[in-house]
Length: 78
Image (cartoon, rainbow, N blue to C red; front, side):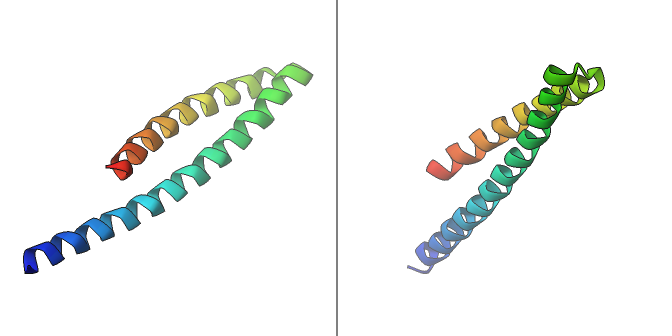
């Protein structure tokens, strides 16, 4: 019985950490998307080459964040 309680506590603790991590990841994804959108718009509308470089860098970072979100999301679903 004691082992089950410890296991239950650990599971709850892990779920709370996953929720916090997911919220943090979503916040990072949103922030990085704003950077991407602003720089992509500057490249398209004004032909700003440096903004294009920043947009590509942000796109790579978004890709990494999305992969991390997928890992955390799948783990939380278990």
